[in-house]
Structure formats: structure tokens, C-alpha cells
Image (cartoon, rainbow, N blue to C red; front, side):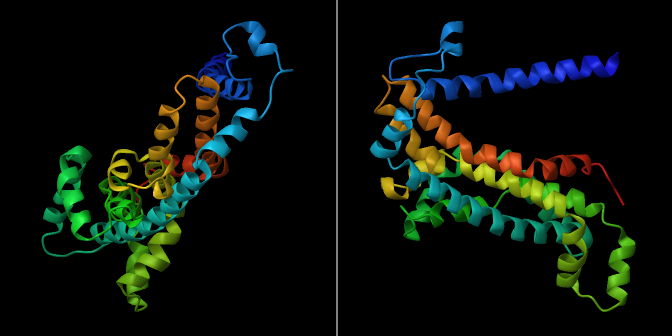
Length: 270
């Protein structure tokens, strides 16, 4: 009886979470001014069309913003994984002076809100002449303490015997990182990579301040501009929101197995 009850609860929770997505999709496919408020609206499929999507694509640069978000997300994810995994390996497997101090400094970065560093960050970006440049978004996104902490936890689970055996065979630190730790923490790398990508995709405040032209805007910053000009059309708003949600949904659907593996392995220690 217990598994049945758990399955029922899981189905109910799934419906609760998917209900807003279905409502958003139906409203985006309805003619302008027709909303989904009654049961009859839910069951009436004859008036569904793609006119709202066509209007959004025509009247905005949403495809350009989506491409900018995707490009910045991919570059940020790759570079962040590279630097975070190196830092995590250093803290997990290497012994060096002031290791505890440096680790404490990284952890303390979690206590500093983004809003507290916006002014010095903007001043630095301005002096480097990176305002209205995608690198103004990418470079600050490379320093994320949570990624280092998560990867360090996984690398702590790599058996010391593997490291010692590789060192006896003459493997140096970079080889220990690339040949031992990375293959054994592949699921964790994918999970953290998805986290980095979604974090970059949903980033709003700093891109909104650092990008001044619509051509270089990312989706999270450009979409509110379009929505503010169409506040009277809920159908257009839902169509634009649906387009913005598609990439992250696809990323999760395609890589959900790695996310589950990463969470399942988070407590394993060597």
C-alpha cells in the first residue's frame, strides 16, 4: 500500500508542477484576447493557432536574444567547469600552504549577495571597455563558489589508492586531474554543468545593467523589454514566455539521467 500512496503523491505533485506550463501553452495558442479560465476553454482546441508565436518572432529579437543566451551559457559553462574542477581538485587532493585560508575565502563568497558588488563590478567592466560586450557577462560568471564546493565533495570520494598508484607511475598533478578525477566524477561534472548553464540562462540583473543594445541582450534581459510593450496582450506574453522556457526544458529532459546520478552519488565517499 505504501508504494501506491507514494506513486499517487508523486503523480499529484507532477500535475501541480506541470499545470502552469500547460496553461501557458494553451493561452499562447489561443487568439489574442481569448484566455483559458473555464473548463470549456481548456477543452476547446479548434481555435488553437501559431499566430502569437509568429507575431513574437516578427516584432521582437527573441531569436537573437535566445542565441546570445545560449552562446554565453555554453561558454560560461565550459570555462566555469574547467576552472572550478581545477580548484576543487587542488582543495581535495593537493596539500599546500594556506589551503584552509583560501578555502575559507571561497566559502565566504557565498555570503556576499550579487547586489553588493554591482558598483565595483560595473566600474571594473567600464575601465576594461567591456560594457555592451558578451564578455562582460561571461567573465563575472566564471567565479561561482558553489560549483567548487560541489565538485570538491565529489572529488573527496575518489579513492586515495587511485591517486597514489598514479603518482607511483609518474603521473603529475595535471594528469591526476584529467586522467583520474575527471573520469570518476563525470556525472557530477554534468550535474554542475547543467547548474551553471541554467544559472547563466536565468541571469538577469547584471546582464540588464552591462548590456545597452538590444542586439547584444540575452533572453532574460530582453524579454522584459518586449513584455513591457505588450502588457495588454496576455497571449503574446505567454507565447514569448513559452519560447524562453523551451531551451531549459530541453536541457533538463535530455540530461535528467545525469542529474539524478549526480544527486544519488553526492553522499558517496571513498
